[in-house]
Length: 234
Image (cartoon, rainbow, N blue to C red; front, top):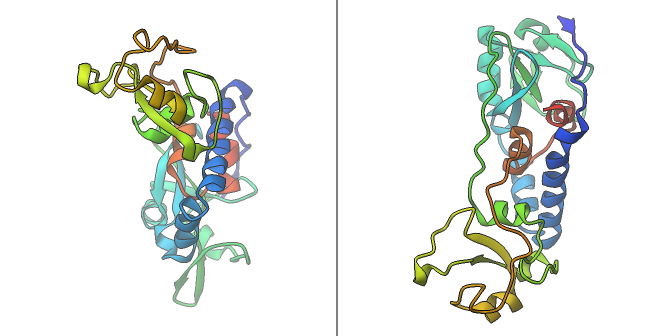
């Protein structure tokens, strides 16, 4: 067992993480029976299905895995578990840790085993290159939930995704041809191009360059506070 310092927080790199967290909060307010329901279901489900953050040898985020897979990595010696104080533990040491009230636990012979929040790969140095999926949610996040024609920011339920060049005119579904639009602008533009509708885009759409940490936040229904030092430093 040894103690490591948390990664230094790099403020510029943390901006898209903050945006992703803010977006999830907005989504929860707009759809209280959507992600909140998924989060509650996951919290009450099998502890081995809970998400665990995997970091590489330099403590950079790599991906999320399940607690089941994390325990396999820990038991095989491929990874060490990180506790809330920054202590690294092998499986034997982790097994001896007391399970606190706030911890998720897995029953074992003679007691319970704490589910780790972060596991550290002992021999893996690479950092994955993030690939941002093209979805309704990520397009709106890229655009800041702002109509790209009138610049208004209505409620998420009043926003649509618009094809700049309509599909009927050969427009494809790509980062460069999809924008967020309010219902009013979407109806006004119809099946015309922006030039034909005399509607100017407030900015040219392009693929976002987000960190892997931001994608992890967006892709997980649960975000544990133990992840924060690693996500914000990436």
